[in-house]
Amino acid sequence: MTDVHVIGIGMTKFGRHPEHDAAELGGAALREAIEDAGIDARRIEAAYCGHVFQGMVTGQRILAHEGLAGLPLTNVENACSSGATAVREAALSIRAGEHDVVVAIGTEHLTSRFAGALTPDPSDPEAAVGATMPGVYAMRARRYMAEFGMSREQLALIPVKNKRNAARNPLAHFRKEISVADVLESRPIADPLNLMDCSPVTDGAAAVVLVSDRALRRHGADRAVRLAASALRSGSVDVEPTSMTFEPLTHNTANDAYEKAGIGPGDVDMAEVHDCFSIAEVLRVEGLGLFEQGAYPAAVERGDADIGGRLPINPSGGLLGKGHPLGGTGVAQVVEVVRQLRGEAGDRQIEGARVGLAHCRGGKAVGIEGAACTVQLLVR
Image (cartoon, rainbow, N blue to C red; front, side, top):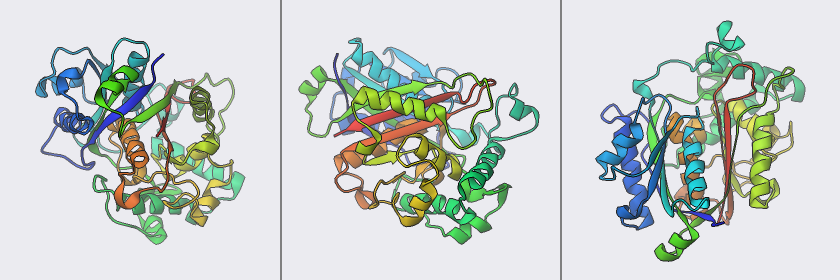
């Protein structure tokens, strides 16, 4: 079975784009990825496009606008993991021998399709009692504080870190550093979470070009990064109350990826983690096995998760700083990992990074722990 390699990456600036729609943003990211790969666009054999609220045939609109109509195209909706799932499906088509050159696109124009806090599906018990996603994560934060002694100031250090990283990222939604005081004084959303603990409503797109071993030999391997594993799981049935402070879905998906790649969490040099809320980064970094349970808040306080620290987390700025355009998020995480492993991340470069992890999780469905989780491992 062939390996899969990323040879091209592209990404728009994340933020508010009233002058462009999701298809235009996706097309811009795709053009950049093709140019970065240095290939003739006619070499592309198939495409996968992840999006959530953009309606039917968004991927077809992108390809038609870019002169690539007629390719096999699959639109992918899998909550916040839509773009990451598109990457996985593209990789699977290459591993299966169906295609040699495939693009994965993730796009979302969230500001025109959604306002306010995301809510669970109306069928969920949380939605029935009026809980929004910020409310659910606020409860998880309170429980974590009770179990592990995390202080409110330690939790605030996560958006401080991520927005400091975003300030170095020219494509990030937010480009201004903040302080712990800024977080604590921002507008209350769901106690203990304030506005700066929550990811924003964002527009944006990202794309990657993936190839087989055979195509890599034809196009050159100088800047290629190997996609060593791409794992996907949905949550298991809740037969008893799920832990508020540990994510079995993240843990199990990560173990799938580690096994497929033949590496462990101790081999990871940097990670892009789905920090839709400040507490989410805590839960997911620990679920991935990158830090011991209960230890991450103190590690952030020590600087262990900073660029230049023991294990940098979200050097792009994460969802809190870079932004969270749902369908675009998972592909953008892969873009950042590839940049880091190539040594092309500029002011936020992690020295000597050779193994990177991208984690994306999203959605809620009645009776199961979570809707979808992906973990991608990339190796230079």
